[in-house]
Amino acid sequence: MSNVLKCISPIDGSVLATREAMHLDDAKNAISKATTAQRNWKMRSLSDRVAIVRKAVQLLGEMNDEIVPELAWQMGRPVRYGGEFGGVLERSDRMAELAADALSPIIVEQSEQFERYINREPHGLVLVIAPWNYPYMTAINTVAPALIAGNAVMLKHATQTMLVGERLQSAFTNAGLPEGVFQNMFFDHDTTSTLIAEKAFQFVNFTGSVQAGRKIESAAAGTFTGIGLELGGKDPGYVMDDANMDVAVETLIDGAMFNSGQCCCGIERIYVVESRFDEFVEKSVDIVSKYTLGNPLEEDTTLGPMAQIRFAEHVRSQTNEACEQGAKRLINSALFPADSGAYLMPQILVDVNHSMRVMNEESFGPVVGIMKVKNDEEAVRLMNDSVYGLTASLWTVDTERAARLGDSIDTGTVFMNRCDYLDPSLCWTGCKDTGRGGGLSVIGYHNLTRPKSFHLKKSV
Image (cartoon, rainbow, N blue to C red; front, side, top):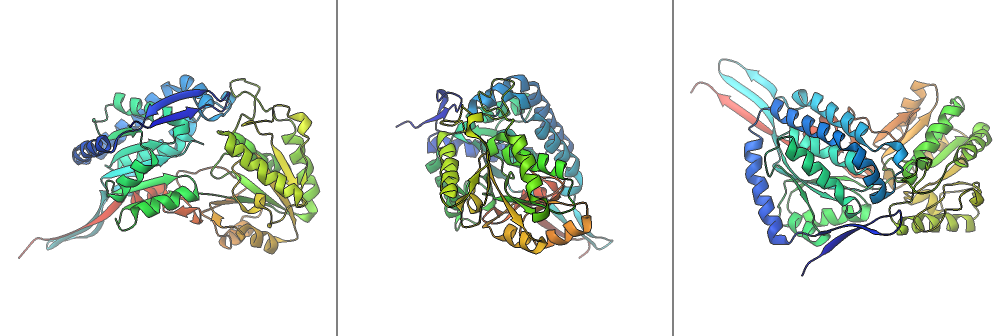
């Protein structure tokens, strides 16, 4: 019995694309092909592997004029923002630059008697399970370094962005990547879980919800398969008394609302010192009130629909419940007549507290709560009052103060005067229910390889 995967466009609810999920036996055959191809791929020189990955990224960039509206149809991001190629190029280029140092042997001894060193050995076959919200950038975070390190890769992309994997497959094939080294796969959830449980992969990297992450861990239990998980977030921003207010407002609100709030490290809660609270709120309302919610294919649209109606309903539920509990909406609904279904108007809430779901449960939509705080200690306590820990954004002119506070925050990345950004030179990681492991940077290569020690005695 066939299992058809469907991409429902958030623009108009139409079926944009369908693909048949692969049968388990066919998946196992593809895995066998990948395993064979990987043995030869890892023997290619590092410079060859880097060159092919860079060529594939270049070819992907040449498709951008087609990709941008295709993304709008799949997940709703407005075409005015030009897609994701800039981020894909930045991340893949940086990982290519880091590869030689990250993958070079650690030399312990080179003497007349001994050679002792530690190599970085590719895991083998890496499964990348990528999300729909930034479908190219989140995929390339693992795909590029995994291939450069000598692994074979299977990509299982979200059904919502099922066309992305096909674009990547085309780019890698045309760049000269040997057949079987990168394969775009259409697996359903049951097949994915079965393959992981049967130890079909040597490493699995998953980006998505906490609930789905738990299922990945459960499937891998007892297999000793390496796993990297980037899960939920409820990222905070803290505006201090000495912050550049105009820049703080513009950046944090963009971090909360861009991509209709569907950003892994988007700002979901903001704390402002009481002496600057009214100023921050007033400026925030002014910015958000000027957004245009509508068809993402139109150039004047700044906010498109959320990827699915159920995502929008989740945020509406959080917001309505918070207002029933005493929160106050500040954005006038009359400014956003398109608000219905997957099209969700942006909202700023004040008079919020941590008993409300909108302040303690991931929203992943265009809503942000803003709270007044007395001092740094209260702000740190509130920022840490979360089951998540991906990023935290601190706003001050005092670097020493930001570093001191950052040491007290349970998070994967501390930003000062920035937010909602992934620096490929730094490890992308989280703590608590945000997951475990780390991508990009030198550490990303370490997670996509294993140490292999050589102890060579020259004389007997």
